Amino acid sequence: MASNPNYCNITPEIEALAALAVRNSSINPDDYVKYDVKRGLRDMNGKGVLAGLTEISDIVAKKIVDGQEVPCEGKLYYRGIDVEDLVRGALKDKRFGFEETAYLLLLGHLPDQQQLKEFCSQLAYYRTLPNNFVRDIILKAPSHDIMNSLARSVLNLASYDDRCDDISLPNVMRQCVQLIALFPMLSVYGYQAYNYKEGNSLYIHAPRADLSTAENILALLRPDSAYSFWEAHVLDVCLTLHADHGGGNNSTFTTHVVTSSATDTYSCMAAALASLKGPRHGGANIKVIQMFEDLKKTVRDWKDEDEIRHYLLALLNKQAFDKAGLIYGMGHAVYSLSDPRANLLRSFVEKLSQEKGRDEEYQLYSLVERLGPEVIAGERKMYKGVSANVDFYSGFVYHMLDLPLELYTPIFAMARVAGWSAHRIEELINMGKIIRPAYKYVGTHTDYTPMSGR
Image (cartoon, rainbow, N blue to C red):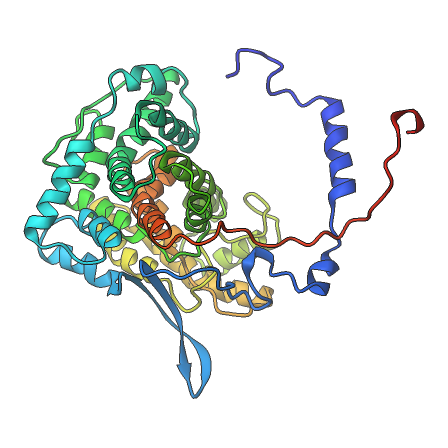
């Protein structure tokens, strides 16, 4: 809570200023059509405008049949390798895959055993915060919004880096590997500081060099640092699936935009974090959990399809939950028939729900996943299909792992920092002009009126 009681107070004068801004800054929606504006950098069919090239990851949601583009089952590739193969390869070898994925994204090829060992050693080497950083930065200003806490910590790390503004590739590689290593610590410590502020015990565990990123997250967070291999493996799968998603998603595009100005790595990552925390991007899995909690309170019989269909209709008609008119976890800007990340998670979620004694909840999720697209198709005009996205199941995974809601989006960031790093390095290597799209002025020109005449 702010020490000054007036700090967050919205005065009537501010309300009036906001109303004035709305009156004088609202653009006629027809003008976007008139001038063929690609709102959201998408065309009228929702297809993204080509704004850059990348070799880091690829999203496939359509194929060519008889010269026509038609939807297909979604695929996600990291450096040309199917993410499903990465996940299954790690599971087959009974090892963790996120570190291998981070290496692949950064360097463009799969590491051999020695290369992976050395990369993990580098992560362990850099998994150390400056002296007194936790006390002076994290504990002194705890926040319920851990994404803001994480961004603040990242910007503060710049003060400890004598080569902060050096954008030579070796230095940026060092900074990126360092941040991949530190994001879990900064996030979990930020949560522990907030939890302590709320009257709970404070746990600040040191990371272990012999643990994977997923294992360290659970060990840092839990009072007894205990976890099962399966718990850590499912979390590792989530990290792998969230590590990157093409160059056009909002936070990665932000990374390219900010990098193109030749700014420092810390500022770049803070900007990406600011993008990711939005509920239309990385914050969506929180909304899924909250929506399901409301559904469980509203629907009496979790197996009654008519009752659930009625609730979903109420969501779309802005009569239930947050009245936003959305079924959270349904639909994606690119995928139509399926999101490969959701498909992969589903199998792990089923096994984890059985282990945790929450199979009934899993069946409810499965039912909503099946009914959701039907309800949406019956109510909305769509240019492509709708299916469950990765947020639909990732929040449920975190819930079953007893992870606090405040860390759901930071976990996304702990994974995506690997992709951001790869895209930042790619942008620096292929640096062209500063990214600057055009905006057309549609206001009027008026003469200046002296103060005495206003």
